[in-house]
Image (tube, rainbow, N blue to C red; front, top):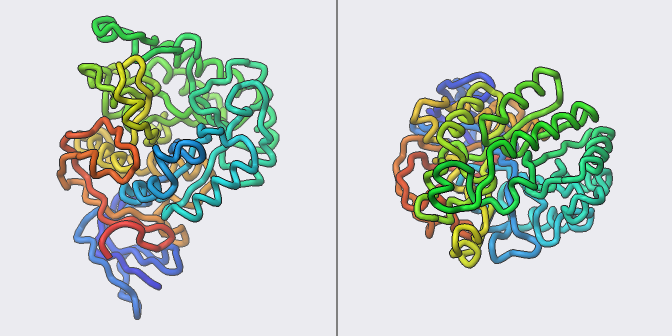
Length: 423
């Protein structure tokens, strides 16, 4: 089956923006540019809307096994397709943790059965994410793990973390860490400063992130491991990241869409849907993160999709669970940065699609002939008011509820098959 997408505004993360057509054949991109209509092809007129590589989202939590009432592979897959996400890189912080080949194989099988988009699972770095004993990294790699992480459970024992990095280095495995000093951040609900003091909330200094990153960079230099920081959210952590890259360490970093578009004042009157981890930062930090993405210092933008049910969010701010759903809001939230003139579309999709694909060794995230036809067709200007009740995720804990947004996904293709949009 061949599909010809005509009259498109092509967003190429590698070569910039152009206009033209794109041909899909046998699940791959077959041609780009001025294309004659092939015999028997289905023609879709894009009407000048944007066609870009599908989003590759690192750090999605799907609550199978253990908490299927919060999010399942099917509900997350449908939400991802509606949000232009064609590959979800899933976290192992489930109940129980994905720390054995058997659990990983269960997750992989469930994903293949239920999700319309691609799923690449990560596995835990230590057993039970407890930071004491390394998982069987080699066996988990063979079972399909694309990276290893304990998520927001920082491995506090430096010797254990060093051994994990050394062993991962010997296998070429990617370690994803959460830069934070846990003794400082434990129990914190927001970022320290005048606002936190006025609200009477337990807070953490931004220096906790810098301290955690400094430690990790020292260990990466010592072991030579491949390392990715899941979220850099403070300006004070950027010099350590820049120094590590200049010294030739195999280091990349990400940031969540919430830390690029929201700040600490959005918490307002203790609104728990704005409680995320790390907590929202100052406006100066937010601007610094946007500039770091623009310069390429921060490589990847992710949703850090974390479903929480109503019972865990409808609590006093200090007690409420952290996290927000974002598979469907990632693209329209990113359009805020585009419409503000902070980032152009090729730069955005470099961080949303190309760089995560490169870091994980995937062939997605590109508008090149021969690449998988994982694509998103969207209107960057379409206005709407976010209504969380319309989200396809089982959990509805979005901080953007009721906000005016721009950017609607019109169609999503995975391997040349349309998984969202009108046929």
